Length: 543
Image (cartoon, rainbow, N blue to C red):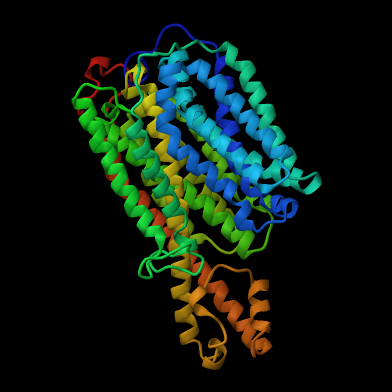
C-alpha cells in the first residue's frame, strides 16, 4: 500500500466524504455490540426468559463474527469489496429490524446471528475500502478513525441505550442501528469501486478448520467462569471425569488453529490460493503488531469488564453511572486514536509502541495504588486518562503497521486477521480477567474469614464459601439475614467483603500491568523507520 510508513504521501488529497460511511459502519457494529448488554434487562422482561437466555444474543453475535471473518475476506475479494459491502450493510439493517419487531427471544438471537455474519464481511471490507480510497497520511488518519469509532460507540450506546431503555424501551435502541445502516448505504455511493476477481477460489476446508477452531476458543474462554476453569461447575452442560468443557474447548481450538496454519502453509507452498495469505505475517514486525494488537484489545476488554462489574454489581449503580465512570477512558481513547497520526512523521512506530506500552503499564500500576470503591476520585480519573492515551495510540499504531506493511491486494487479508485477533482477544481478556478476579476474591475471602475472630466457625459453616462471587453489600446482608449472624457480625462480614473486593481489584489491575509490560519487548520489534525511509519493495523482510 502507498502509505505513510511505506512511501511518501501522495500529492493529491481525497475527499473525506467516503470515509464518513466507513466510519459509521464501524460505529454501527460497535454500537450494536455495546447496546446488547444495556438491552438485556428489557429483553428479559419482554420475552419472559432468564438473563442467561437473553445473553445468548451476545454470544451468538461474537461466535458468528469470529467464525466467518476469514471466509468473509475471501468472499469480498471474489465478489468485489464495494458490492459486498453494500449487501452486508443491508443484511445488518435486516438484523436491526428483526431486533425491533422480535416477538420472542429466538427472533432476537436470529437477528444477532445475521448481524454477526454481516460484520464478518464488513470488518475486512473497511480495511480494503480504506486502502482503495486513501493513501499516505490520509490512510493513516482513516485507520485511526476506526479505533476511535469503537470508543465513541461504547459511550453513546451506554448513554442512548440507558436513556431509551428507561424512557421508551430497549427496541428503539436498535432503531439507531437501522438508521446508521441507511446512512452508510447512502454514503457508500461516494466510495471508489473495487472490482472482484471471480477466478479466486475459496478454501472451504480451511474455512471449516479456522471457523470451528475460533468458535471453540471463544466458547471455551467465554465460559471459564460459568462452567469452571478446570473442574466442572453445576452449570456446565457436561463434564469428562469431572473436568469442565471450557478448558477442553480451548485445547481443541488451539489444535484446530494450528492445523489451519499447517494446511495453509502447504497450500501456499503448492501455489494454490489460501483462505488468508500468511505473507502478511512474514516478518517479525508484522507478527509483533498482531501480538501487540491482541494485548491492546485484551486489556481494553478486561478494563471494560472490571469497571461495570464494580460500578453495577458491587456498588449497585446503573449503566448510566458506568458510562460516566468510563467516560475519561473512552473519550481519551477516541481523541488519541484520531490525533496520534500527527506524530508519525517525527517518531517511528517502534518508539511510539514502546512508549505507549510503558504508559499503559505505569497507568495500571498507578490505578492499582490509588483506586478505591469510588471511581470518581481525581487520582482514579487521572489514571484512566493516562491509560486511555496509551491505548488510543496503540489501537491506531498496530493496525496501521499491519495495513501499511502489506500490498493493497492483501488489504482484505489484513482485515480478516484484525477481526479474528480482536474478537479472540476480547473474549480472552474478558473471560480471563473474570476468572482471575473471582479466584482471587475466593482466596481472599476464605483467608480473611479464617483469620477473623469476630466471625465464628458456626457462622462460616452456614455460608457456601465454595461459590464466592462479586455481590453488593445489600445482597450480602440478605444472605446473612438467613443465618444466625448478629447485626455486629453482619457488619463485620460486609466490611471484610468490601476490603477483599478492593484488594482483589488492585491485584487484578497489577496483573493487567504485568500483561502490558510483557508487550514492551515485542513492541521493540515494530518498524523503526519514518515516512519515506523504506521503499515499498522491501515488504516482507525483517527490519
